[in-house]
Length: 501
Image (cartoon, rainbow, N blue to C red; front, side):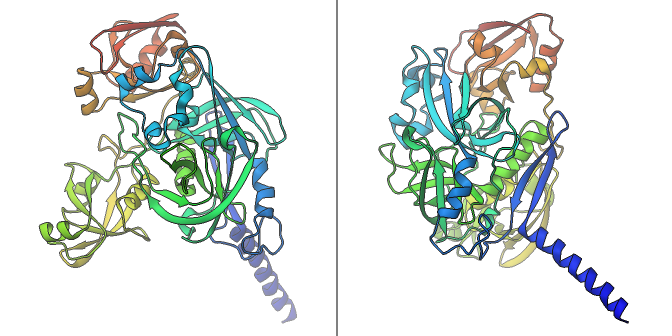
């Protein structure tokens, strides 16, 4: 009997140990292109009573333990933009006013107004794996000829862009280093309004700087992101904080008192370009999904609900006969889209997606953005006064539920570019029937050839290309010389750029 009891106690002891390990955190593992796994740490799904960064009791409002753990994992990113970058006037002619300039003021991107000679810009980034993967903002690295990362120990490394997502303003870069300090991802759904938050970054060309405040709102949409032109569904559902954030903090860490990453600092609300009270961060759960997509598939797998959304208000209630006083309703459905194919109907008011309550359009966009085509979500709606649960299979932009993996051949890698299929709106604006858009461009052969973002490639070596797959195939099959013929959206002039493979 004693032996039996001992065995049972042993099982309970082992189970308790395993349970504690799982409670303290988990690891997300996925493969990159070379099939070597990348492990990204997931913090515990709740706020701890004791600090996991120090192992000691963490008094409310004491940021010292978190700061000590976080500062080494936040880096300074310095970008060099050469004379090939279009001047501000040229950019506005091609793509309209830069929304970041509208939001931050001209000083935020003043370096882009001077096209003569290389210009410097500075931002921040967060190390998320010990072998050198760093997450930052897309606007920190876009158009850069060269990226240099400075660690807290004063070492510096050249960085390579692994992938970007303009729809969320996120980017993943890589440096060749090992045994680096890193941050764990918190479950940003558990972040509470009124809880402490700490911002770490390199503002105003200063050394590493720590500021603190509270989370003052969640699910904020501020209309700053334009998104990818061929995939124009920007996702804004920011964590709002009053921790002081200035230009240079972009891409830096927003953490809780345990030093866990709750968001990536992205924007400030300011008429002057300097701190005026509020900052905005991309939630960690969304950051994690974007990073995983880039590493596993080569590009972000965007799912779409296929609806036009409306915020419930007095006018909508009277016009559509809605039976609720708040929330988000389906104003219209796109034929063949996820919602229409799964049985959702116009004027359905979305109450929950899976277990998350929905209050704003930003809430829905973030929840959908955390899924991939083919995922099935549970949607609870109010339909004419009754609650109805609907299982929705999510689809991609072309109403396809399949994952689209981007092949990255050596030839394409050397181009330093992101391509995008043209939407109907893109074709109409540019006056073309087919082509592929250069959505982002980095250090590589296309930049050296003079290609700028927004260029629409219509032919490769005189062979018409109608989508990204055809473009990549044509480039890969080309001999030593590649000629790209196309045009910019607001110009009637056809241009040819040539480069050697």
